[in-house]
Every structure is written in C-alpha cells, then in structure tokens.
Length: 107
Length: 421
Image (cartoon, rainbow over the protein chains, first blue to last red):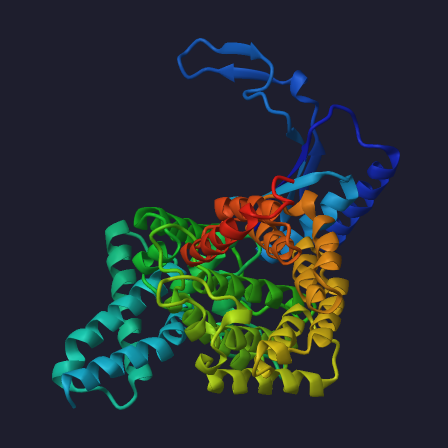
C-alpha cells in the first residue's frame, strides 16, 4: 500500500541546515526499513506553470493552478502496511522537516 | 410464545448480538459496508420469520449464519454484475496469531476502527452508534439534529475512507492502546452528554435513548477491558450522573440543580453500582485519570443524603487533583462552584472572573457568575449575567431554569440600592 505524504508550508524558502539533516536521517530510516519509494522538495508556487491542452492548443499560464496561502512544498511517497503505519511515519516526517504534512492513499 | 415475547426476543437479540454479527462479518468479508448491510438484512429476516417459526435456540448463531448467507449473496451478485471477480477482502487486518493475553473479542476491533483518530470526531460518534450500537441512520440523524441524508453521507464517506486509506481493523498495539482507548471513551462520553443535556430548541431536554446507549456501550468496553481504570471510571461517572435523572427536570420542564433535587427520587441501584466501581478503583491504588476523578466527585455528591451533608472539602480536593491532570478553564469553573461552599461566594467569584477571557462564550460561565453575584446581593450584575447565560444556553430545561432565576431576582433587585452597577 502506497501513501503520498505532502509537506504543507506557507512561506517561501528552503529548509534550514538542521531541518535538512533531520530529513536526511529520516530518509535513511525509511530506506533501511523498506518504506522508501520516492521523495523530493519542490520549487515555490511562483515557479509553477499551468498547461491546459484539453482543447487542442496548449494554453500556458504563469503561476499555480490555485492561489492559496499554504502550498505543497515537497512530498514523500512511502510504502506502509496500513494507515496506522503511514501516520506514524508521517508524524516523524513532520517533525524532521518541521512542517505540517498530509497523508493520502494511492488508489 | 406470544407475539410480544417474540418482539422482546428480537429486541434482546438486537441489543446483544448486533455488534457481534457486524464484527464477525467484517472480519470474514473484510468490508464494513457488506457487514452492516448483511447484519441489517438478517435482523429483517428474523422479524419476518421468528413470529411464525419461533425464536431459534441460539439467536446469535442463527443471525450470524443468516447474515453470512446474505453477505455471500451480495458478493456473488456484485461479481456477476461487474463481470469480474471482486476482491472480497477489502478491509485490511493483520492475521498473525494473537499474542497470549491479548483481547480477542471481535467487537473491540470494530470499536477501535469506528473511533479511529483519522476520522472526524462527529463521524466517530455516528459510525460507533451505527456499527457497534446498531442504531439506524435515521435514529442517529434525529439524535444529532441533522438531515437523514446528511448523516447517511457522513457514514458512507467514513466507510469509504476506512477502505481506501486502509484504516486497520484491529486492536491497537499495547503501546498505542491507552491513547486509543481514551479516544473511544471520549466518543462514548460525548454520546452520553448529548443524551444528558440535549441541545437545540424543540428537543427533549434529556435524551434518555442516547445516554442509555452510551452506558450500554461503556459496559461492553468494560467487559472487554476489565482492568482499565478509566473505563471503570467513565462507567461509574455515567451511572452516578444517570442515577439523578429522575430528579433532574421538574414537572414543568425546568432543570433542577443538584442542590434543589429531590434526593429521594435518585436511582439507588445505579448509585450503588457506581459507588462499587469507585471503591474498586480506589482499592486498585493506581493514580486515577480524569474520568475516575469525575466519578469520585459524583460519588461524594451521591453519598450526601441532604445537600448540606455534602463533603465539600473532599470535592475541592478532588478538583485540585483534576486540575493537575486537566488544567482547562472548565475544570477551574467547576472547582470554583465547590470553593464557594467552603470559602464563600466572594472568593469563588474572584476565581471565576479570572476565567473571563477563555469562557466568555460558554453559558455555564455566565450562569455560575449569576449565581454567585446573586448570593452576594449584587442583583443588577446577576441579572446581566443571567441574560448572557440564557442567550448562550442550548438546552430548553436549562433556559427555563435560568429564566425563572433571573425573573425572581427582578422583584428584589429593583429595590436594591446597588442596582445599575
């Protein structure tokens, strides 16, 4: 069972060196225990570009698809037996990156 | 067997067996939705057949077998309709053998799943009443004053989340158990309180069906987790509170406060049972949690034959203990009420006034102030506080009581020189 753990944040800027170290430690643990699938940090919403090609000609728009105060700053994709396991890992991830996270199952 | 006897047997079976049937089917088919529907169908068949065929010797086994058949029918129907083999087991659970001493009752898995922290609190309440309590969606909707379709959607969404996000169907590990049990108890306490002091105009001030259901489910948890002190504490608290119900609302539909209640009308059997549980916890010699302390406070009140015999210093000592565990302003407010009986209303009022910032939107804060101000002879201020309390209160019997108190004040306070402060 795979879960997306989204990192939610409301300010631009990178993780601090302490946060980076904690994230690296957490990632290592995920790999050792077989939970790791993928993870990454994202550029801020002002680096986003929206493409809509539903009508044929691809329409390109600068900026995120929806303007919100909080945005997706990064994510983990983890392998976990059930939601209890995923929530425990997400709690550790939240502490490591010092940000709020959201957990959603892949279908 | 008469028709009435059969109806009684069906009611008994519903109370005693519903959760067991749903739990057994959830375990077997791995799907709450299938389990719920098949259990409901099995009971419908019982209503149809038992009056003619007689009540089976083992109603629980009959219901489980019938429900199993209904569930298999549905799975066959759906796999035919979808034209592909449907994966039957969709709710996840671990299957390793239970460690020795682990709690095995299937109903516990059901309760912990329904009260999972990933579900919203109001959803936990609804799901628990449906899956464990066996209340219908329309009964639950009525109890919480929402549309039946809204309640139906809430329960359907919860079942879908349990399945899709894979909320496990199991008793939490020993490490997580205390936290998760307290989550379950919070759900049951919420149901009880809504029954005991129902909110909303046009509602009965006391919804006995809800408080009785909460007590029944807490008894079930107590049977499943007999060593848990907080479970015993919550059950005792509910029993000692419910024991006072006959004296709690007057013939005219007005709330009667603890001081003014006819103590002869209290239910002595419930009080005896509640006291036994409190003594059992005292004898256990383990530091009590919140519910045990609240139960002990209620034990002090229900031990006094007359309000004047109340051991207020014991009540304050218990509140002191509770404040250390739960330093919430509501606990501080209740402590102040007891303090008034020992140190007088002035000391109590000073303590209550310190809570203004946190409790300004809470009707009991204003009602307590009004009461203390009245005792201090500050009629004008008391009236303003009653007005505020009435405006914020949701329970019809409580509004009637506060209104009478305010209006009694009216006559005297007009003649008082301190009016207008």
